[in-house]
Length: 252
Image (cartoon, rainbow, N blue to C red):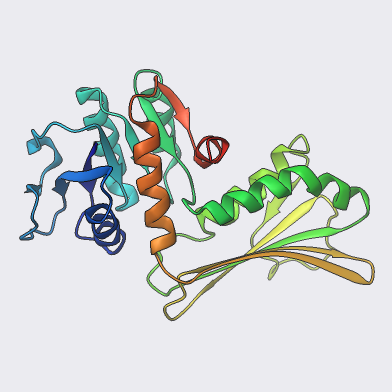
């Protein structure tokens, strides 16, 4: 049984994760943390430092500003941490890297198996398409409440391509002030915000007289919640270090 402390338990994703865990015989929510009080069936705390419940892992799906306290709490408790929140600052990322020296830390820009499968495919075949003269563009679309742009997933996909080719590409987020031809060594990343779009990502390889597109559409937040729960069960008992969805997929 994996006992989980859910940070952001009353948020959109937190509620979905708690619902999935309630139906999973292999794990349970030991406690919840959220600035909004609730009448949950498990103990809840508005201040993370007040949480004195024993658990196997803490899962964070909240806001970027809350992550540093979550990481510090996990380090103080020697508790494995699953960080699902995106839009993190460089200082927060550095703190997470430091934490991974003493506790197991799971961090992924997207918890969907589908997205991470596409990332694996891109790592394997992007070089072939680049050598054939294909330009690379990434389009991401999300609901009108999302704060960060481009999405962490768009950057994950771009990095999957870039890292597989010695980081020779640079990213372009806005061409409105440019009056010049497209550089062959750029990856264009565009963001759309509107309505209730859960999440759509397209990686477009545009060549001469042909276009190849890798697309992923999330129709429910549940796909991310399922991945977060899977990550929590995966990281329990692991040695200190940094883990991501590629590690989970290697065990499937």
